[in-house]
Length: 329
Image (cartoon, rainbow, N blue to C red; front, side):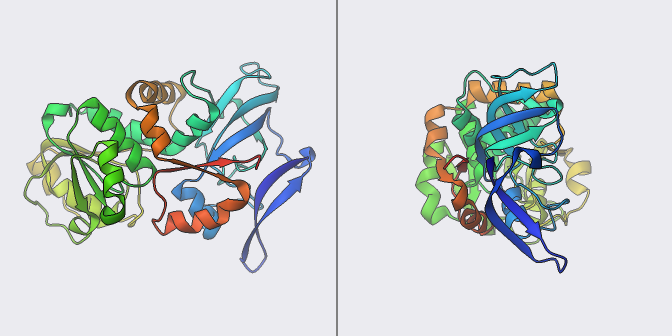
């Protein structure tokens, strides 16, 4: 038997969730069985738990796009019992049962070795959010954005991706401008992570001009829509904006002017299907460039039964930093 948060949908489309005891025979038929220690709560998980249909593609569903644990059994020769592993992405928690359970069945290709620098709890304190933040930093570096290029704006800075991005950029020596709707309550937190300037999200959330006054060398955007359009329009020539989120919306109400007249690059970051080599690169850089003390400061741990309430909070923008889920409590 194992314990899981199970999402169900009836024939009328009504969503329900419950902590359920399941039999091992209920697991999907996949070659690697993992004893899960921790999962995480991401914005996408919140959508799955609260809204259901926009994210979840098969029912019933165990949510959780992240997990860390130990291989219990494996029919894949690449993995052996006792191996520490993590999973990020691959439509886990959307099309395939995910990490919010004490046991999970995975394809071998979805697994990444648990980085030696991290415990399972620390790996999930990072999770998809930290891994995505590092992919964004790599995208900026690969477009020649260096600490002396100028300020880098991070939107949704008090959230999971934003918190890690602020901390990593600051450690690397960048001047970080943190944009958040919670400056009053989270200002001290963001400064402790390394932000040198704070701006309220309202400064970037309205309609954008085709070209604004240059303000940023680069940006990491977790919000999309008008916010992304404003950042792009205010980015200096040959700057780069890494886009990885759509909390404000999926639209991009902008023009081609910044791309043609300033040679700005918009770099899309998709963490779900990155190959093993790119994942390893991002995780290795996190181990090198993120202060674990700052990671601890941005992390809160909850039990499996606490997840539905936390899912409502994360969609309302009320969650600071990272939420680790101890699936065994």
